Length: 113
Length: 111
Image (cartoon, rainbow over the protein chains, first blue to last red):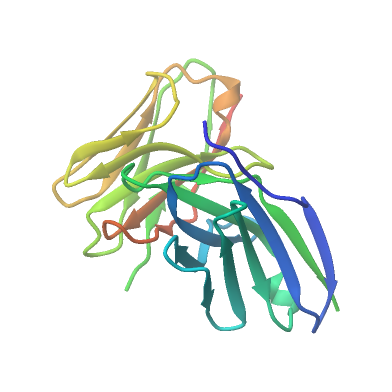
């Protein structure tokens, strides 16, 4: 199977600080990536996506950076809030495999008030 | 608009039994995918269906099967349940070539 890994399984940040969650992927044919947020008892919630022809994409308080050279993806959350506490997953889609995504193990983000 | 709906939300089954999980996609979404999420891990791809045809299958045994109906809803069937099948089963729908929207899942416990 594919390897989508996260550098840190847990992350604690102070409320108001910025958070950075990292993800490594192994398949150079991956061309589409999504970050998901999953709260306890719920399904994953789409946060932001990026295609391989981009290296940066911004949303509301979130930014995704893609470094294809080292096969690395990061999610930056600005001014982290208690409601951001959740498990964050990166998911990769390999070109020409349809809508099959490979998920990493996840990073648990805890925001300290 | 209703999101992706899954039923039931929770289910307890005995080893060896069979289970059917159901999913209704977002209106207009023709692609449905199923994922298994074991506690503490990321979701693992099981199946994808588009326009009632199987478009992808993950590394799961033949005990797992699925189908999609003309209204694009879908069922996931698991036969001869094992304790290791206990997991959160997630359904996601999408317009082809774009990100998924997941349902809240069905929590299956096999005892």
